Image (cartoon, rainbow, N blue to C red; front, side, top):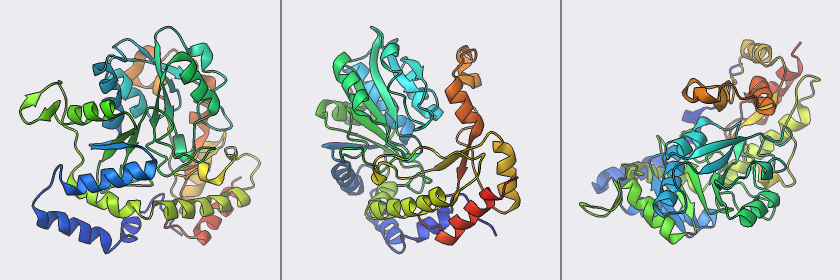
Length: 369
């Protein structure tokens, strides 16, 4: 048996011939940037998320970076201001802050939910805190009413990193990406809503923020050859927008397929050394971008699965505060984050896996000695 972690070829084929037809339409049009395909996708995705504005950009890191840069241009923040961010996130969440001269304040997660521990947040808020960056890690909704209340109480901007949670909902039914002041989205090919290359977007109800983000992503220009800001080149191309428009139509069904497979894992993995994350109050609060499990003998478990033809990944082997690029943080002790990074192993899950494959993976996990 050979079970791949993520079969992108099979996933792309799932949307044929629509994807090929969409690509051919763009090629024939002769218009490859900032055209009707972008307009169509931005409108559809804004409606899907439940926000007034969607601005396509080059990737998910750029989306977050542009949001915080726009807040600086608006005078809402300035370099040196603090942003609370999960300590166990992917490094892109933190790069978006340091690239803007903002100061990340690393917050430990709740070991049961894997998301920001809202009981720890208020003690991290200072007179320099301007925002909480909420990361819906693994495809799980990280929002809580306590987090929303703290943002309102202290006047903090709530920014969502929705790179892993397209289509996810919170407890009151709203979609992630619409819960705060703005959200960054990644459409990296391996995401639940993935392009055929790098792509990203910002969603918001703030018209001023959206206008500035769009200008910043276009060299800082709102009118050709006139530059109000020192911007960057970060645009969603027409080919990627066309592909995303096709795949967006199937996102809810694809997420439901992932939930069905995840339920098999949850029901059938029974091993004394393997811990599964806590289930959330509603099924649609998790889109299972990843299916993480935790084991003290993680590396040996991964080798065991590899021997039986099951490909797994680790998300992520080294936490951000132990990375060389942030060496001034290397002395920090964040025990919950460090334990999760030492024990996490992601099992294969996608909308093209079969029930039988998932049951086989569960059986192999249970056979670990």
